Length: 221
Image 1 (cartoon, rainbow, N blue to C red):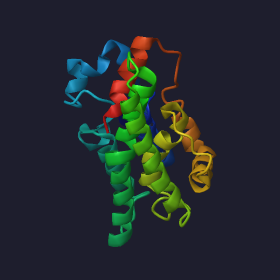
Image 2: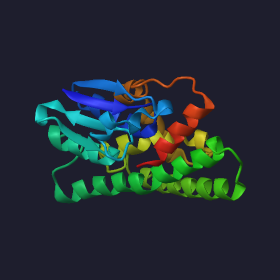
Image 3: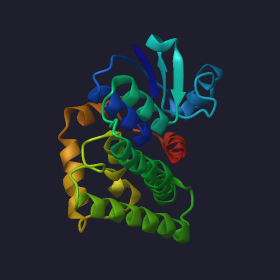
Image 4: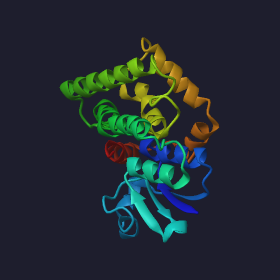
């Protein structure tokens, strides 16, 4: 059994996808970001950075893992799924996973903040992060013109990237002219695990304060 600490954000969704795809038994603990539940001592004992998601693997001496990318790698290695053993193929998965962790997530997260949540409009900041977010999505589109999934076969790299890429409209980024990216987004949207993940936990109507707290959490990789 795995204790899964999460909220309705792209970083939370990516771990939910992995848990569902791998068929792992887990118990969801929904943290209320609007009340800073993720900053309370009980959760800081699991993740000292005070961000979601995090897991505690009860079957492995209550081993705690934080940072969404690290969680995906841990779960893939635990199950032997969605992360190849072949040295080169494993590296390809890790490259695209790091591309999401270091680029797609942070840039689209910042675009969300300045486009949707920041109390005053800063056009230069909005344009900067939307332009960079768009550039990264173009990189994905070119890659997906050559392969079905980011690393060739479906992997944790796709699980990590899809929750961010699918929310491009929320970041104010249009992808109508990126057909390969759209094809991939739609293909993953048809997967039962991805559909279930978006309800784990389900999004809800949020106050402005809650949206700001969620946005701040989304910036974390």
